[in-house]
Image (cartoon, rainbow, N blue to C red; front, side):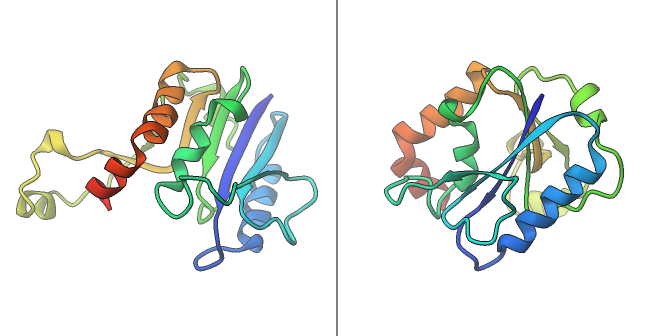
Length: 165
């Protein structure tokens, strides 16, 4: 069993139709048994087969670094986890994302469109910029690295927000 996650907060960019479309895409293109979860502040009109994890109104992840919420150790079990952004559209079988990827640490999609000239202009060295894309993230639910990200952000969120926002 694999757990699939997406995240929807507010409706400025995405709404329930994006969640339902992603669920249907996964259902149509994954032959491996899965559970589908949506972390959201509003579950209205979301497909009843999608398990809802509510944002707490006092949640420190609301509006800043929402994606860190997917690393919460309380919502994972001993299984593979895949996260998809709501703008991802699946066109073909994705079993390889479960069967063929090493789930040691966090795996992201390779970013092939990094703009090297822009990075140079900004003074970023090659080692200073991340060559990954977080539209699809894979990890093992009980991996301590995953829990570290969540716990570190939770403990230091104000400093992180002030530094990066």
